[in-house]
Length: 380
Ligand SMILES: [Zn+2]
Image (cartoon, rainbow, N blue to C red; front, side):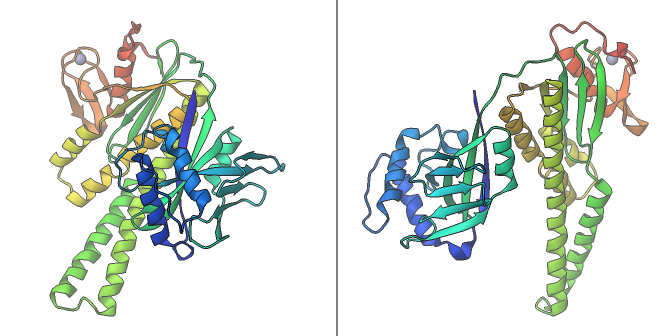
């Protein structure tokens, strides 16, 4: 099986001609629609590459099927890889050269329509890591996103079959106020480990309320017609910076935790079960008495967490599936659970009791067809 992962790198806008890239994208779009238009003022080698890619349609772009009528079609390009030991792989006429000796990526002629024009960008760590894992970056694409030029790289890797050990890693994804809970079920169907992964909520709340506070002060100034004073401008900057900080923190948290969990699954040769309860979390959040801005923050990057997690699982060929693992229904008798103090869930019907984050793991024990062990039998 071939696994793929992609990354996009922002290119220096000053060194790129956005209009030229737009034209290349328009040509690519035409090529994908089946038209062949040769433009006299664009280098022939670029046009050859664009039409050469027609046969790859659906197999290449980001490892997924390209939307045929997508108006903004990125320009596919071949790459040449020059490795540290001097070996070369890829097309000699490639317009994108990944030089691992000098740790740079050179892009020829697609950033500006001038003969011999090239730009150089530093080699991202991501590429080096993928290559270390046995991956190869055979294709690149250039395109615009919100009018900014980007280079997209797609790494491919032939994955070895994953030999399952009988372990299961259960991952329950909620809004950040409850966080991501994971549990490990060992081959004898016992819970070996479980833990909630929660970002520093106090930090998020502090930043959020400070931004809100400053925003209110800014509002007052605006109503007084003082919105272009240095004071108002400073406030606006500070609000923006604080909000950015919250999202950057969550993005980083999601990325790190997703990676850690993938590594854990790989080490254990586990099968992964994911409960993606974001919709339920959203509904639960609506009922809670917290400001709507904060609700939005608690949901931010949760989708991305799942996306990052599953792409990486695919990359390492770890089997995974989505499974509904409720945390408010008793895994023994199906009765509704009530929440006691300290986030402990209890069943008034059969006496089952467990921390809220652990209930989904109990459900995962049950979700296995061969599971006969009662979840209460688990050893500490
Ligand atoms: Zn029960």
